[in-house]
Amino acid sequence: MLKYIIIVFCVITSLLVSPTKVISETLPIVPAPTFEQEMNRIFGDKTKIAYAVIMHESNMNYKAINYNCIYNGRSTFCKKGDESKAWSVDCSVAQINVRGQSCPAELMTSEGQIKAIERIYKEQGLNAWVSYKNGSYLKFL
Image 1 (cartoon, one colour):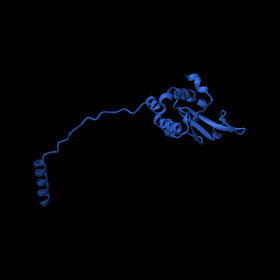
Image 2 (tube, helix red, strand yellow):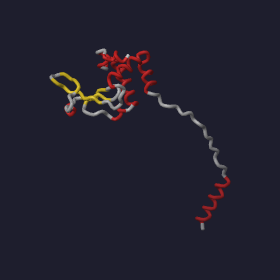
Image 3 (cartoon, helix red, strand yellow):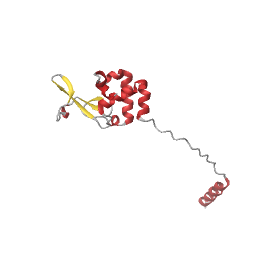
Image 4 (cartoon, one colour):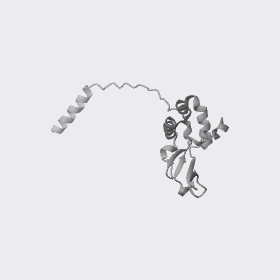
């Protein structure tokens, strides 16, 4: 009997208490910055050069992977079939170099590339990319 009294009390109380007014507010949807916007933020007035470097490195291919082997004491691209002998791998659009034989998943995304590009550029400048040092990027300007 006490059980029923408690239930009736709860029902009556809930009817007497006014419901809380819910205020809904529409928040603006702010899109994430595009790759182009991030490149402009990182490189500023050198953005055109940075794009030329990336074009030479990977032709803007997010799936680009190149393996590096050592032949005669010199590091260079692995010969076809020698990928298992690679000491490092270059990953995605900016060909970020990673020791080992596989690219981390985060480097194969736009966000991961931007983070890596920004870190490398702050530490080493454009000289971190071979195509900048040897001038091969110039044909993409």
